[in-house]
Length: 463
Image (cartoon, rainbow, N blue to C red; front, side, top):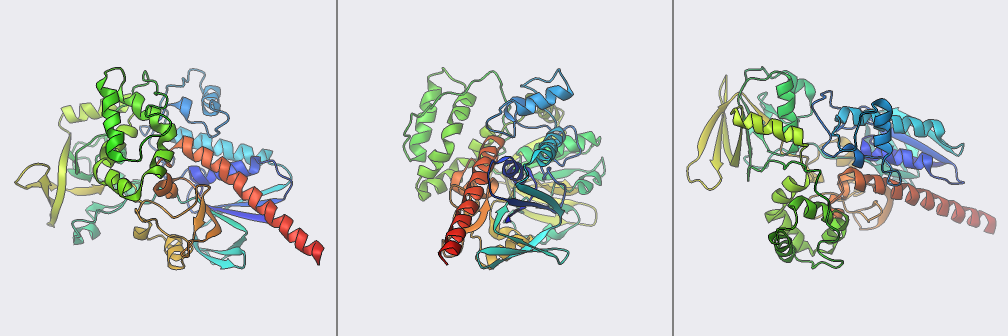
């Protein structure tokens, strides 16, 4: 039996399991999905709050690249009034993802065995051409191929200032620990690190809890995510087939297109989507670093947008002064028995200011640097040289098909997809890219095992 173990059952891991069960092959497959939390959910779709909506309309959220209306059809079976332009709850999308997994399991061919194991994988040890995977309960699994569907890393704690306050009970490092958020008193004043989509989610969650205290959110540039406008249509190859590998020139062209006044910036950003991965791979490393230093916050606030109704709610919170958005950086924290004083340096201002709050909530966005991760499996894999963080600190060294490279730079039988490939591909965290990666990865895994079987059979025949 050809054993494939998938570690992680968020969107990436679940889709990989589905694609493997649907793949037409003559070889026997033993597929195991390992997950420490809820299967088919991940962080994104585990939220219990209906206010947390998908940031993409329903018509673009199918799990299958060859069936673009699959999710919409599922929705309309539940509610005939559903439209392709609807922004539905992430909880509902998690229901859909579980439906797809269950359907694939029930319809799998006789050549595919499938099991789910509710455990945390804590270590992987090579054993010849296979692997031994240690689980938290002391048991282990063997695998011929391993898929590390690690998803987004936990929110990174800011590097500066290095403060003992980050160990305080008044500092909430992980905004996705629901019980931590629900325990915040309604009248408490909050300081939020970050002004992106995570901050938006937490403000909505707090409002659902009838929060009355003041909320202040800060990022270096104070940029909120932009709102979707579904009337805008993507431009086709706005930069032509062979764009220049220069960040400065690319954005000169970007501004020149907008200066003509014929197109909305959303049309241009969305039109670049099919080219983004190739654009990124064509950039020399110094150009990638230049993009990350100077352009990344502006790009991400325009690329990763809010549903229009959520944008309207955020505007209302700001107008009523319950929410204040600031640009600047944190200088220090001073904690007393009752409050926290956050000292910040506002952007383009000479004088620092002091803010008195009750709690500080970290919404700085998912961490990309694997060297900063503390989960046992990642620490083990890096220590043993089985995975290597990329030089940009954005993901893992791998090939375009997801094959991971070890410390010696050699290809292995460990694979990944989704966010760990961001350093290589840049655009690797959203549904359209991940669903295609899952399909391609399933084909790669099956072909690799079939080839190995043929070689083993040829060797046996020769003897």
